[in-house]
Amino acid sequence: MDKLTEARQSIEQIDKEMARLFVKRMGCSEQIAQYKSANGIPILDSGREKELIAKNEEYVENENLKPYYRHFMKSVMDISKQYQHKLTERMRIAYSGVEGAFANIASRRIFPDGELIAYRSFKEAYNSVVKGDCDVLVMPIENSYAGEVGQAMDLMYEGDLFINGIYPLRIRQNLLGVKGSSIESIKKVLSHPQALDQCADYIAEHDYEPVKADNTAVAAKQVAKLNDITVAAIASKETAELYGLTLLDHDINEDLQNTTRFAVLSRQREEIINAREGSTVILMFSVKNEAGMLAEAIGVIGKHGFSMNSLKSRPLKTLSWQYYFYTEIEGKHASEKINEMVKELSGYCESLKILGASMDNPEL
Image 1 (cartoon, rainbow, N blue to C red):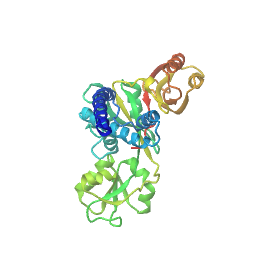
Image 2: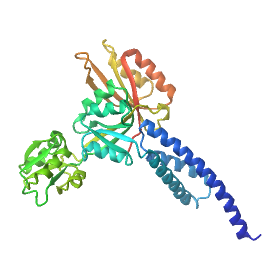
Image 3: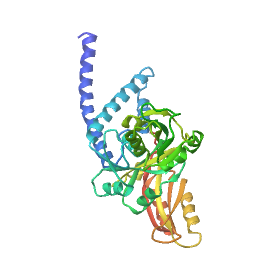
């Protein structure tokens, strides 16, 4: 047998084994897809991919082959994601708003294969997941310009859903008009009050009359219906495409770093022990109505090696002048450390809930 034939026969045997391992690997991908679907976790996890490739390439001792192996692994992962997307394409994603609103944009970017279902309010969207009508909820919880979203915080404190991811979306406001309009022809601008506030300097500079709308997408829809070259909307670029409007000016909000954080909530909580380095654990609690209890509770968190990235308070609806707290903490996420901290913390609390865990996800 010559060397060529021998090498080809060896490749055939290797390919046979690789085919067997491929089927086995895709079976694991199916299990992962089922878990992600049940827990409301997006398919894409770029941090996990980078970790896995960096770890596995250490098994390749030949430095010349490492670039080819990285390309090979990336291809395998892309195929795995395609399969997972196929398995989860019928996920039902609840959000509050209308098509083209920022919640709709965030939902589509997080779950590109999901079926997006709009509700009139946060509460209706939240309850749709509680009842099982939808699989996950995408809901804004905080804006860098306006602070936390109070209604969303209250629902998370009072409800039964868990956070399995938090995703930042940069808010870029744009001036949108009908065909034939221009910056100079506009006299009146429609948008959500918050968007009008974010663009107050721009509106004043152009001497526009601000008019409030339910949200930015509704404003764009109204402008398209009016078909008036003197009326414009302040909204996202996506709404321009959706309602056939012209982009007259872009990035007109005063703070171009303006970002809204969207939480993904589901009926099941991803195990905290699965949280990787760089992730945060999210807690909600109220302290006993005794002097120094809040300081003691915060001290417990630090004592166990966790640092707080944020601490927000909201008034309790059942007790006047008393509050509950939302905090995101980071540290070593070994389950025993979490359990030890929670056990001691509960001694100072009237209520305490582990709301979930989230990686530091890239901007949408």
